[in-house]
Length: 419
Image (cartoon, rainbow, N blue to C red; front, side, top):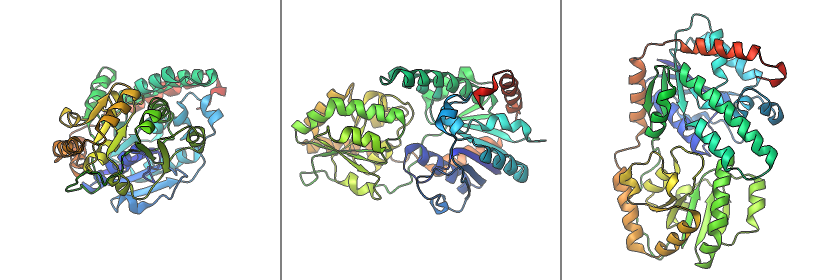
């Protein structure tokens, strides 16, 4: 099976959860027997290292600048989608489809949703169309717009963008032959918006080493660690809310919080001088060593939806998990039963202080969650399951109708809106 896999950005380097999911999923599909051609804009924040994906994926980074933000804001497409669709990659995609004549075209995330309008230009094509929905993007965009408390103009832009996201996502759901979600909740939410497409839930796998045993004791620093990039607006909003509520509580109890991952310079500069318990470590090569020197792993993503891949890093490195209750979408109850949960940041900070020196409880948490997760989250099985489902599908060609409808609507709109 020949698969053309299109991402907004090439998912390298592996500095964020969405990149890890896309890269490992494509790699698993290739390892299961497909020929995978992965096309996307170069991220520009690190090398496009083909070795990171193994030999089963042909990496095709397009080295072109993203569209400027002002132009993206006035586009008919969502901002991130418009930014990821310069002319260079659109032409490269059409050439790739004409040359390879794939059996399957994957639109990975709505950031690559610009692809849909171009598919009708591919003559005599009978490929199966897959949309990978990392989140219920319509809901997430609406939540972001509602939760944002900053500049009024930016809030209006976010509200307008939420409408664009909803419009594009509904077109993608309507056009696809197969929709992939990370969680069962998203699959259920999408069903009323589908036009006969199959839905497959593909939770993240874990590709790292699973620590065989660990004992947390007084030799481990009184430290909490949080992994993850702080570039996406909802993640910055979530962390800012938690730091406002929790940093002073943790500092008063002598508990450290280390934030590990890529972070924007402006966010770091805004917060670093205000914090007592918290340190920004930035991107680190050896996250496993950082987790080994902590007593709890933190998840505070109340806004943003989706499966949080960092929970797998914590569990399989035997790091007990502390989280806001709304941050656990897609995680089985059997795992959540062994985690520390709270309804808001201040409550979570107080619970962390209460448990930070309770070694029997901390070790019971890490052992229980590891046992509950064992035998699951396997990328190899995910790749095989995905190809098995695709084998049974017949391409419906709904993308042609969606593309035609989108083009008709666009032709009647003012040309200054962009595309």
